[in-house]
Image (cartoon, rainbow, N blue to C red):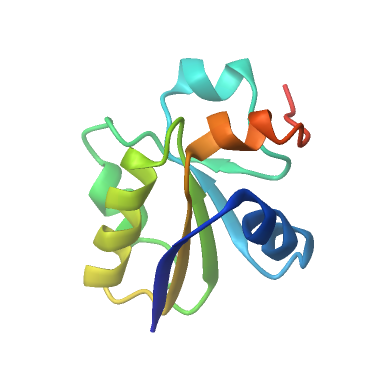
Length: 106
């Protein structure tokens, strides 16, 4: 099983492979302000967050991110504990992504 924090350049490289499911775990308001292309939204603070995560295909490969990397890091560990094979967290979150000048979609 692979579960680790990765930097923006590695995250971008994996995202461009199109073989990962991308999940944004920020709030709806945060997501609507701008998100990464093709990101699915699952709000970390929603009451059914864990069940929504648990309902995902555990054999898929996942990239997760949030604003600063904290919520998504917790999500990565939750996914590990739920039996997901491969999950990578964006260190520094969308803040770091934006600082690199990478695209954000609205």
